[in-house]
Length: 259
Length: 276
Image (cartoon, chains in turn orange, green):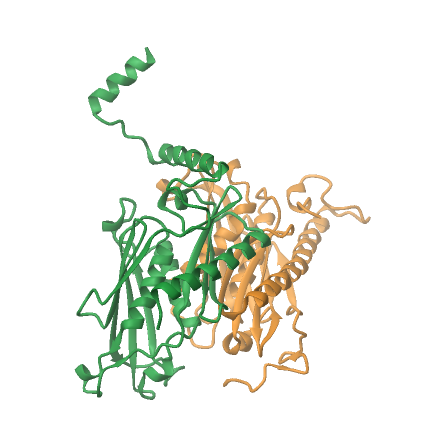
């Protein structure tokens, strides 16, 4: 596809969204049998699946830390996830994405509870449609909770960008390709920013406005993440009434830090 | 008794080797205590950059080059340019390839082997600054559309790690590009011309330590910092790239503060060292 003449017409984007609207999100918790925690996350055309293993023994041993767990994060794109077949295996981009994604989640994990152990997070991008790293972080955050890893809160992520000189939330593929800026952000529900990257062209004021937009987007995603977790675990408790499902046992997940 | 034993051990081995972990804790205490008093180990203000020198054309064989000294940090950037085949999706545009290696010569903690995530991240952020600011007019690097374009290789060699390699590498890259020439004569493609530059992106990095923000971290400050934010800004004062690196979260206020001082500092550096 060549560059469309206009990416926004009369305040409406090519896919029919308003500038501050997220793409549809679909979340399924606990989709894998072998993993300790898992999550399938659809974010517009993105389809990603996250698995968490651990806390478990660290291999290779020299990576282990005596006072806390090591968190490892592997972001990987399937070769069929993009238009032009991607060569399988890690490349420079995926190594960088893995690093910043790991750093986006580490601050909420109580790593010091599990010395000499590893918490492994694997994110597989089955289909890519702009915003795979944010989809991956959203999925991984849920998968960590599903694995019962003690966390201070969930982490939610989305991107803000600029197309046709307008700030927009959650870029789609065309907006990413032909837009003027892209800024993926991850944060905790109390507004601490754990991932921030940006490329393109933003003025100082646009940046500040964009950051606020991303905050609203992340909070909306946070609500959906919470709902998905509660849905899974409330059905397990088999409670017919409307009592909060996390009054026992799984409070680390549902007791979600800041409200 | 304990002192006596300690002395004996000390005497025998010359210097007691302290493990890296203990050293890191001691350093952390030292720098943290200074920070509470509003001081830094080298006497700088929190928003003060270290002394910076940039020399260009230091490697004659390279099409462009620069040596950057930022405090104790020392990097050399060489730009090599040669004709090559364009990417299929951009047949009429030149190609930029940025590489950075943390070679074992530069620090006792760097190891040989393929670049790891730190080096890859550094290289990709340097690349992003050059690319996203559109500082090189890539369409003017086209020789024959779909067949031959100029490929610009930016190679960053870190020689001494004194902290904040990110800024030193970015400055070196843009300084080297600004003096680089397309070697047309060598390839029978006409006269040599300067690389078509349109903007001068400058990266400025700050770290967060215990809630305080410090500009241009030294090696010790960087090693104990919770997180690092690099802000790349252009001639028009707008941002062309940003990267948060490290596990500690930042508040919106901290980020906005870093963005503001980074843009100011970039302007100063640009005016002093990188006038077109």
